[in-house]
Image 1 (cartoon, rainbow, N blue to C red):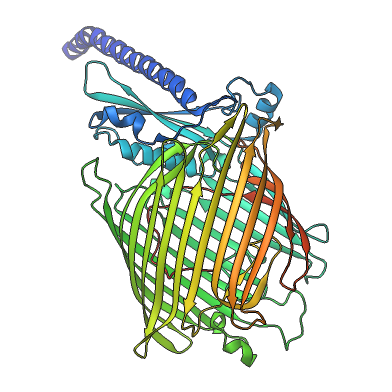
Image 2 (cartoon, rainbow, N blue to C red):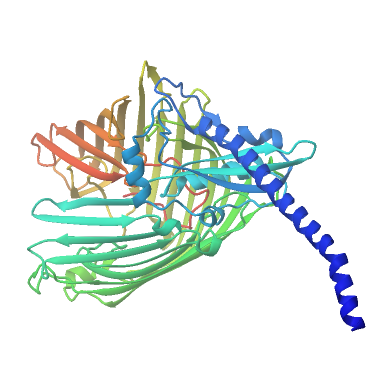
Amino acid sequence: MRCLYLFLILIIIGLPVFVNAQEKEKQKSKTKSEEKKSVTRKALQQGIKFISTTPKDTIVNELSIDPYVEYTGRIIRSIYIERIGFEKSLYDSTKKVKKTITRVANALHRNSKEKTIRNHLFFKTHEPLIPAKLSDNERFLRDLDFILDSRIVVIPVEGTDSVDITVITRDVFSLGGSLGGSFPTAPKFSIYDANVSGRAQRIEYSMLVDPERSPAVGNALYYRKSSLFGSLANLEVGYTELNTNRSYGEENEFAVFTRLNRPLVSPYSRLAGGIELSRNWSENVFNDPDSIFAQYNYGILDTWIGFNMGADKRASNRHRQFWAVRYFDGNYQDQPEQPEFLEERKYNDVKGYLSEFTLYRQDYFKTRYVFGFGRTEDVPYGYSIGFTAGYITQLLMERPYAAIKFNYSFASKKGNFYRFLIQTGGFYRNEDMEDVVVQVGVAYFTRVWNLNRYKMRSYITTNYTSIYNRKSIDWLYINKKFMPGFSNYDLNAEDRTYVHFESILFTPWTLLGFRFGPFVSIDAIKVQCITCDKLDKTFIGISTGLRTRNENLIFGTMEVKATYIPSNEVGEPEFVFGFKQNLRVKNTGSFVRAPSLVLYN
């Protein structure tokens, strides 16, 4: 009985204390919630102001670190995530998106989850704020294919040396599709969701219907997960019957493949690397005679890893050194039976070891109207110098390889961009250099010219490539990458000079969210052909067309283009009409890449 009285007394004494503690906890949680709302409300106002544009805005380049410099070294107290919905237009702040469109978009689309965004961050609470690290992360988020734009906004905490950070993102409508192939005789359809359930997962299915195939229908299925388990590594797996994997041979190839890749997302990251495993085989879906069909089966193993030296340098120092090693093995289990194919490089095993040491510094400007129709674009500037060495075995030749690569780019605040490229690489055998490639490139982008509500930008790029003492590498050639509708792999050229000029007018015209830009361009190519009647051959293409893009949708720019070639590969005038879908051009890229040979075609 005495114990019961004692227990009741303890309850009577402790209950008010417990209730009071609960009330304090509720009040603390309420205060924290109100504090979060206050911080994110301020951040949203700033973020939308930074992202949104008006038809008459003036385009000036901004250093990507500028918004964060004044907070250097402050401690990050809290990180909040906010997502902007489809109801607001980011590319004309004077307009509102129609409610019907907003309702349909929100019904079909799942916004990126907060955890998904956090899995793509590389700064944490309780660590000092590094301006360049935040700007790198903002750019990284913008580069994700399911994000339209992002801003990271810093709000100082009054009376302390701490700051609160709000990450603001706006998704694109992640459902999409494309139509390709040879329409209407052999159309290819693709449907995809780039952000399934808002979890940074892409699923894509493609189907080709071609009566000349057997079977008439070919399929492909692809899956991608971005930042697997928050590691910033991307996983890709797929199966294709449509020759869409990395294919060596010229026949229609089936393939199963897996890739895991972790890019160097920032100079403050330590590791980067990747691995690819695939099995590829040719299938005679077009019922070619056995005498001409190349039956083969090969596998690919390609793996690399790199270490970023100096990741812990002080915040203001962006100079880095990166060292990477790579091993690749393309192994044929079955080679074509035809003797002429056995002498070709692409139908033989290739194995190689490469190591590359890179000195680099890269920063970014934020601007608009380079390749996009008003979205924020990140333009890199800085330098990289890479030294490559390795050992390659192919066509019964075992040869050491060496290369040097130099890149330099600069962007002025007025809006002009400059890029320079010099690289050369070759093999050493029998006391001589073989298969040497030399390449020089220059690009110049003008600033945006404001013509009332219209904006115009022009650019010119030129590239010179030459090969010396060719033994096994491919000759230089011209294909549609250089000039629309032009494919000639039989020129056997050892020198190629390519010049491209383009001017595009970004208009205020809109239709259902699509923005339009008419353009004109000129392509000029000069090759030195050792097997042609005339040693020097020059080809010119004059083009005009229209590009359109809805930045809120997942698929890229669409382009309708007409090209006049006064003299084609057989010396006759030619008109070429083309349509491109999912045209994607970005200025940004990885700080460093896997060790590689000098690529030229």
